[in-house]
Length: 422
Length: 90
Image (cartoon, rainbow over all chains, first blue to last red; front, side, top):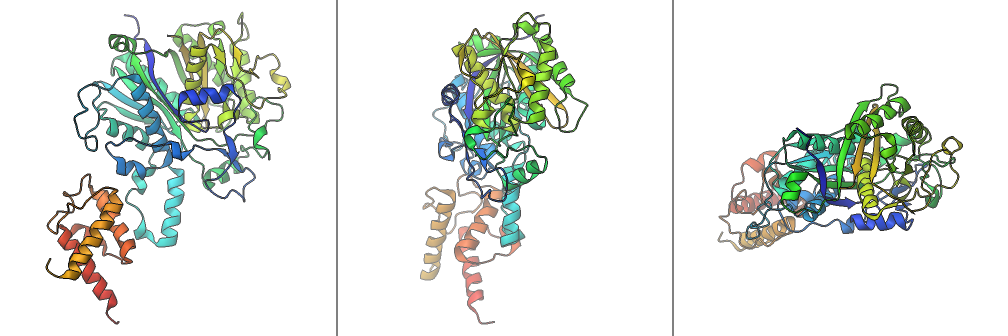
């Protein structure tokens, strides 16, 4: 029996470039940078004073269940829900006949056999910091009863399920910066297995808070570049680290037969997925295990390396990470008759941890739709080690049939997805 | 709630609850049940509401009060008595 085909029928994004997939795409093609001086706290004591921040004025919710609670959630929950609302809305999946119910009390109706898979790496760090400060300043008994619910990583998936009345499995994956990619992969496998017919899946992260900056500065992974127009710069010989970004990208994935039966618009097919453990290092990307992961994803899709037209790389702007990813890609495509174009969107959006993979999927779906590869922003002087790799400097028209998406996380977690034209 | 002061306090509490839940709660009466009369109320929300009212009235409620207050009348009396106790000379 052939494996079930899993397709994307809904997309939602909120990121420093905007609050829709179209705004994200427009920002990429026009070279807009979402990296700006940090405003969520005074960053004066840190070397890095920039971030890719979401405009909270754009993150609004229609009247509906749990309105009160949503306002008290940490930012990653609100962003995930906002993106999920878009994805579900654009999917046309909502069941008819619920419009006469009280929207303040009753979730909208959706077909049964739905599930939620969300990737979240660090959860509500800003809420933890705020909670500690509040108890120091006002006393322990002034702690909000919503503190714990607001910050636990599952609350993004839980809020989506609660607000939309999705009754099947809800799973949260904490796989560091591969979390969102792994969540998408788990959703693909669940639909392939027949355990659900459709799923809301993606990733969210919002950790622009002092503990993030102190922790990552201690690891020497944040860029110290003083010009936000020049950082982060993936694959550039002068790259010096990442810039923290906020984002959520959430999708409706669906059994193709289920989607076609209801006449849904299909944006692409998730045709391959793999994840593995790179056993070489706690925090660095292992080229050999990353290569093995990409090769496994290709095998899962039944493809050879030359079938990939474009790679949406993790490409963070970190010195070791970028080199390791491209070394892995060189190994994967060493004998390929043609090699893919490589691009990274981190120069536009910053590095959004668990949301990296899902953000890459949103960009890849738009590349498939528009037959255009978006540019690697801020890349000026390619690292000499990468000169044999075709890295997109400008937006370029190309035949884009299949894209490889990478995401790698601390702990040696690698994840790769293949997305193909529907 | 015969006394005018209690009525004024009741109105003030209703106003603060409306601010807190961001909706019109003018339907509340002294007999309204705190946990069930306010749309969408939950145990967590009730605890947060009491923290909010503490700030509004510059009072500190006893930690066990959440389990003892059932009606709006109970809440009004509790706030009234706590205020009076605070105003008494030590």
